[in-house]
Amino acid sequence: MTERTACCSCSQLQIRCTAEPTRVSLCHCLECQRRTGSSFGIAAFFDASSTEVTGTSRSYQRDSDSGFPVTFHFCGTCGSTVFWYPSRIPTVVGVAVGCFADPLFPRPTQAVYSEHRHGWIVTPI
Ligand SMILES: [Zn+2]
Ligand SMILES: [Zn+2]
Image (spheres, rainbow, N blue to C red):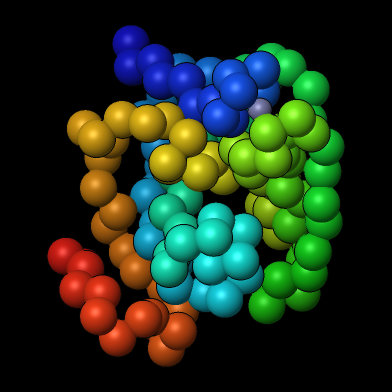
């Protein structure tokens, strides 16, 4: 069985994923740029039923273009956002791919919000 764990910088907040992601998505949107501090975000989506959270998180909810809010969970100690719940699809959890710290993680299969892509970025999708 595939098992991967994503965690924050200080490791207290973790989400264990016991299935393959249903989708891996690279996002150029400005909200992801602010959330990550990087030029884009990469999200792995899982069925929430195949994940398990340990540690304590704080949360931040924002609206999304779909009109449904998204609730982001981050570590109150180190500040890493590790996972989030899109209320549009309550059975799904998004996990920040960087928090797996795994260069062998499955590659993204779609890129979205390309209108906000930094001009120097060349992605494989
Ligand atoms: Zn932390
Ligand atoms: Zn985004």
